[in-house]
Length: 321
Image (cartoon, rainbow, N blue to C red):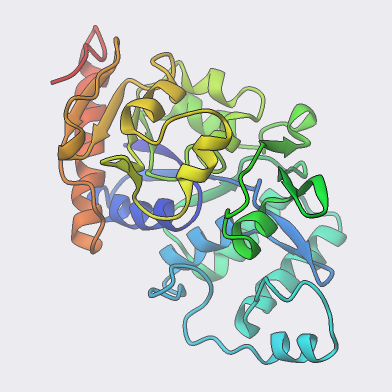
């Protein structure tokens, strides 16, 4: 089976680990969000790509869900001693090596997709990980604070401010000129099923969908999404702050409507959200908390089973059940 999945950070990576368990013999292509990417200390950092790579490759810090396990922070401490900013974004010593290699390859002229493939040769994540675009895009957030109305990088809003200052706009800078990375549209065209993990619908999945051609390609496939909202609250993170910024309620129903029936054929919701419905979309309720690897695999298996059933049905999704 050929599966394509769009993924952001921690939730997406943990779901993908379950997907590998649920479909061990499948060919899985992961299209990774690069809107979170940022340049720090002269290095190009790709948080979501690295979280997927480390998680599936066995190098992730399991407790926090990002960064390397058995990490130290000597370089961070030395940079702080010199007064180098920003000090609110901490990179570990092991993690620095990944960003150094990536930056050297980018500076040598390699596209991000080729760099990501090279990095994955070390980690062997078990999936084909492709950035959504080789073109540079960055998510910025418009806020108003004591310095007035201004735009800051998403990472500053997310990490330093913890989304405590309301976002007035969330903008993917460079999206209008960005094209899908090589292999993205081809993987979608060849896919038997497309799975949307419970990643942030605005700054992870939503960002990928802004790259021209990707949403249109997906609308011709069988797409099953897993709700990132359970009982009116994000499964993890601050997706509610992102949804509020674009005028969308923090509910499984509202996120389904945000994606829309032309895109999504099937939608998995938590049991407490069993009343969710949208014309043309098949909705199933089941436990959605990924409290361990077995639970993640069960959710992934349910998504695949739904995708297989919908793909074989002439009518596709026929509403809630």
